[in-house]
Image 1 (cartoon, rainbow, N blue to C red):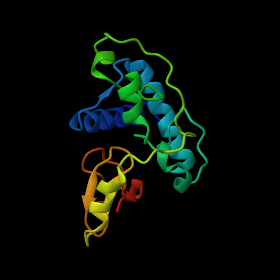
Image 2: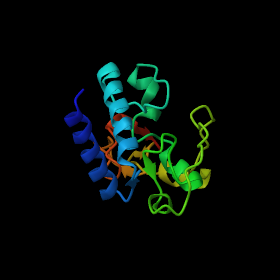
Image 3: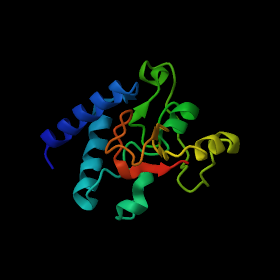
Image 4: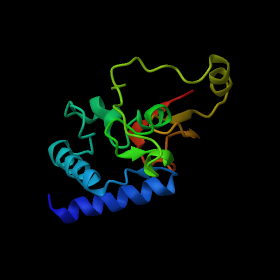
Length: 162
């Protein structure tokens, strides 16, 4: 892995984050360390597993921690940063909020975020609905998109919603 690889990944993630309304941590040195960890995991496993978590080494087992992870949005909403602090809130980026430890959500039971009545409405449709596990994007078609148009997560990060 070279500095150019890390810089290229940083530029790509920054562009994707900003296009989707997210911010990367303004501490570039810190972020470049995370880029190195992400690239190490990509070399090791073939995907960008969060460098702050232990990956299983099987994509199907690690889908929830592939960057951007499934826990980014709840972490940002509650703590102003994701678990590894790659993504931060506006207030944190402006220095108005201090970075505090973010507890690990990975082992928590994932709560069903859609009330049963709403899911029933989707279930009555003849077209399947797929949900991006990262950002919650809903897509009503036979198969999910190859990439989420919102957060750019791969197709295998979608689940059948209804």
